[in-house]
Length: 296
Image 1 (tube, rainbow, N blue to C red):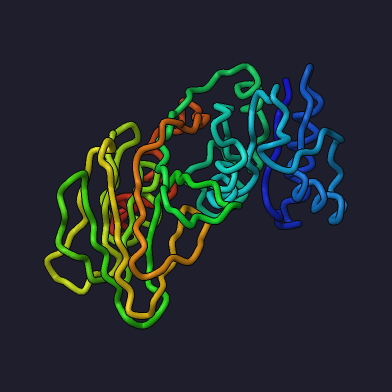
Image 2 (tube, one colour; image 1 turned 45 degrees about the vertical axis):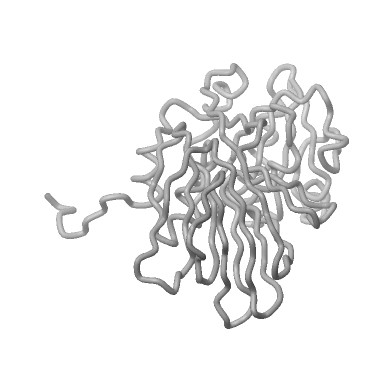
């Protein structure tokens, strides 16, 4: 079994956990490791005692026989992995060393690595996550034009921007705001949550359309079928704005039009049976936490 390992710089405080995990994984029967080059070079620079393996630089040289993709870090690392896996349908498991890790499958702590057996024996569920496809004429060549969490358009100057939104053939009143975002179910607990969007249970076939700091008291987020075709035209006094696709950004201009739709491809995410969505809300977002009744 070939397992790809990806991630960004990992705090040296986690060195012992990382090296123990990777060596434990490597020592299993018929397991071969494959490292994302920037992570591998960082491990070597910081003297992490890790086992050897194949090196890959991105999607183009990720071995075709990769069975499993592990993203070491928090949600940012997980999102970056989308542009590496792309349409390969390789199951991805997030191994949490970050702060929140809402998208991740498991957190490495002092409880050991018994879950590795489940991972290697396919004793897990696959959650099929929808992606948003971005169609924009001037998209940067190095950007994978898909998003797992959300797509947002935001102002770059003190002035509010206008967003002329069309849903299928229906033109909405212009949003005057700091920006607007379109989120998936997975993204409902990310940026969308911060701007007042609803929490959406995974598997719901919807998009969230939410304004960012709107200059209208009567503007609220809208839930749309994920079959919707969304067109957004930018009206910017400063002449430009920022288009963000998860953790990727680029400049866009006044008058530009961006089309958003559900991708035909999905992301296959590893989920262990004990990691229910509602358990994650309770553990990671402290849903319903009430300090007044802790002793009751």
